[in-house]
Length: 126
Image (cartoon, rainbow, N blue to C red):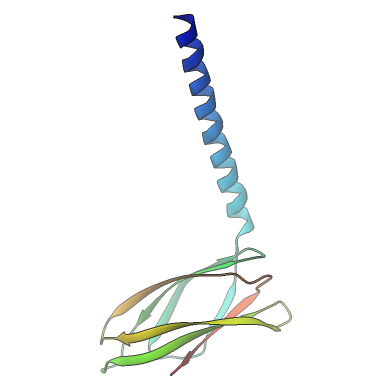
């Protein structure tokens, strides 16, 4: 009986320790993410960026791409250019969009691995 009591106590202590460590890690990481400036260099299709946040080693972006034209959009690439604080080019990546129907909204969630990104420039290529 005494052994079971000790075992239950250790399980509870271990569980509480895991929860505390998880919460502390969550709040520590949340503070490290900062908002990043962005510029969208095209009007059609409409790109609405809801969130661009990053640390000193990665960037996470959430956006929605909506076709507000009256025709099907085919084979476009979204080009993301990453700039540091001085406006110097760090790197770029492209996301291929095969087609976008009239009125269709495409959610975009991308993660990028670049160091010390201060701003992002988004352009469209064919």
